[in-house]
Length: 273
Ligand code: PAF
Image (cartoon, rainbow, N blue to C red; front, side, top):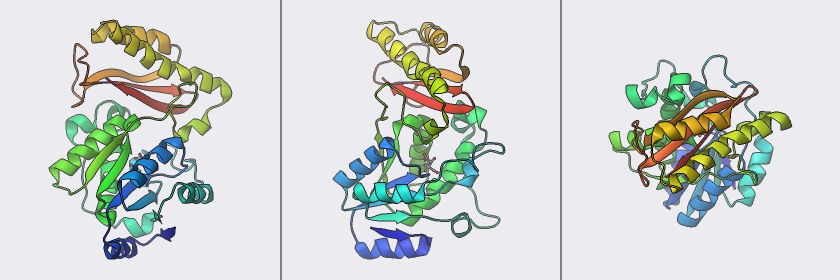
C-alpha cells in the first residue's frame, strides 16, 4: 500500500497506473461504514484510493474540528487489511491556496436541514470534494447514504460541473442495536448512547407506519417526535429524493431524516423509502 501526501505526486502516480479507480474520501477514524465503502470500491475497480483529511473548511467556528478523532496509524492498518492500494493524506497547507476560487453550495438545498443548523458547512464539503475528485480523477467515488444531503449536493455538483465520475451511494451500516455507524459515536457515554438509539427507533417506527399505509407526513413526524423525546432535535424531515418537502410519502422517492443531539454530540440518521 502506497501513502502519498502531495496532490501532484498522487495525480502523476495514478495517471501512470492507467487503471479504473475506486475512490473513498474520508476524514479518518475509519469504522465499518467506511469499510463497506472500501469493499464496494474494491469489488468494482482495479485500484482503490482512500483519502484521509479532516477538512477544516467544513467545520463552523466552535464545532469539533480540534477534537475530531484522529487515528492515522489505526486507519492505515484498516486500509491495508481492506485491500486499499493508495492512501492520500493531504495537509491543509498542500491542498488549499490563499485567496482561492471557491465553489458554493446552492442557496436552497445547501442551507436547509443540516445546512440550516450549520450554514456554510456544505460549501466547505463541496470545495474539498471538488479538489479531491480532480486530484484522484476516479472512475467511481463512494459515499454513504447516511450523509444523504451531502450525497445529494455532491451528485448535483458532479452534474452541474460536467465532472466525469460515477458517484456510488452506499447503504448505512448500523451497530447491532441499530445505531448508525459514525466517527462521532465515540463521543457518546453509555447513557447518551442509549438515548441516541431513539433516533434509529424513530426511523423504524416511521417505516412501520408506512408499511401499514400511513403516508401522511405530518402524522409520521408527530409520532417520530414523540419517540425522540427528550433528545434535542435539530430536525425531523421527510423529503423526496430531490430534497423537496412533501405532504405524502411516495415509496421509492422519499427520504426521512433526523438530526438530534445526544449529550453534546450531533447525530444524523435517515432511511430511504
Ligand atoms: O463525509 C465525510 O467524511 C466528509 O464530508 C468528506 C466527504 C470526506 C469531505 O471532507
